[in-house]
Image 1 (tube, rainbow, N blue to C red):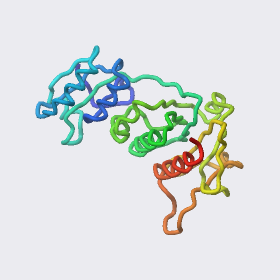
Image 2: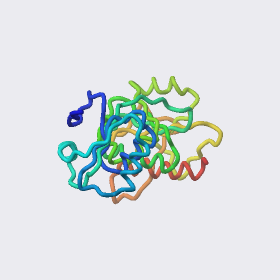
Image 3: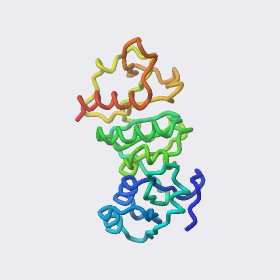
Length: 237
């Protein structure tokens, strides 16, 4: 298989590195197409683990392909897989409105799993979740997470009308530290774009601000999500 450098319209994507490749095989081996291994890679434990997950996909030692696809010198394994569709469970959600940074999205996915949130809604336009840069920055966490795109926030609300919506905005009056999250309802924590945040149409009685010192203008998006998840999980188990 002649794997091309990643483009959004391809039917496949690929992992960069041993750990995200193992995560892909662990959760989506049925979607795996091929695993490339560099000839200098000698970790027999990892190679044996790849072969344990092996079903219908091929394993090939191919230095040229790895050098072609990877932009980092320390990449020795690449896993090619078919893109797959996901549905969100009716559980607590993180909602990202128009996220634009691939590294940020990968970090957020990893934080979500760290606080046992397995469902992420993305309101279009947004980053391509199958871009290898997103997969790598998530450290493979994306493969055990449900992520779904929605054309609008209203489309998301229609699918989950009973969720309590909490929007994180600089214009909010309620601080995160003072917010009480409901114990017996599903919650959606909503965050805006990295540069512009959420527009004023999202401002409501459940809008929340993360207060910080005047030494900075604002927190970046991954930090905001991680802090919010920490406070949320302190209350909601």
